[in-house]
Amino acid sequence: MNLNALFLFLLGLVMGSFCHAFALALQQKESIFIRRSFCSHCQQPLHWKDLIPLISWLRLRGRCRYCHQKLSIRYPLSELILALLFFQSALQFGIGWKLIPILLVLCILVIIAWIDYDTMLIYDRFVLALACCGGILIMYSSQSLFSHLFGAVAVSGPLFLLAWITQGIGYGDVKLMAAAGLLLGWPNILLAMLIASFAGSLVALHQLLIQKKSGKEKIPLGPFLALGIIFALFWGEPMLSWYIHCFI
Ligand SMILES: [Zn+2]
Image (cartoon, rainbow, N blue to C red; front, side, top):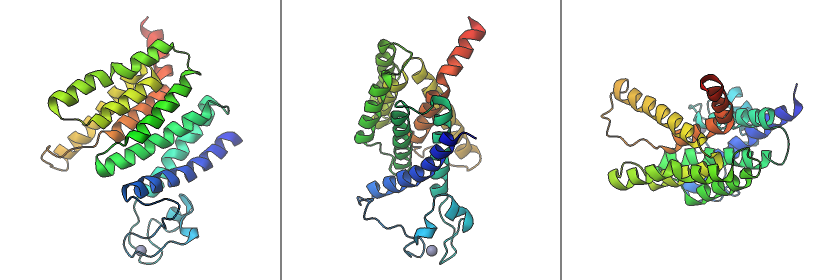
């Protein structure tokens, strides 16, 4: 058993809970440090034993202790996602200084995804924080500085034109892909965009065909971009070397 990975899993559970609460508190312009968690149905403040990441939700079978209404799946989902990503980070990157900016990137992306999902907004401060982490991670990268700088504009440049001409996507998405491009470099940022587009198209198709929506509803891109960026961060380089190995 890899104890470091286990520790990171537990840390991820806690950070997942924190990031979700932070995203909600920011939207409601509250401080996370004074904000009390309460049931959204009966408004009953939650006890500390109802707030243990994942465990409380499982123990209460996803229902409020007081009014027995269903609790949002978002809490355990956020906790589990970050726990698994932290776990994978420990396994893949090992314990070292590099791990800190990687964990920060994951937290920032989860916060961006939740806020964009709720409000269709991507806050500049998180994009800036992502770019800073990207700048730090360049020091540990096997790619050249040029590939990271090119990555910053390779996808965000065409996206900017698309946003300008069609108004179909937000400038927040453009800025997010610029920061992610700096972080991932070229061609990983292209992989991130392809995965985001593929996942976004699947959801749009599902809405159109299964949920019978009109197709005019706006879908927040942030969660899909975050998914693509995370995938490329972990598996971009292995995929690229596999691709080169197979075809060249
Ligand atoms: Zn309740």
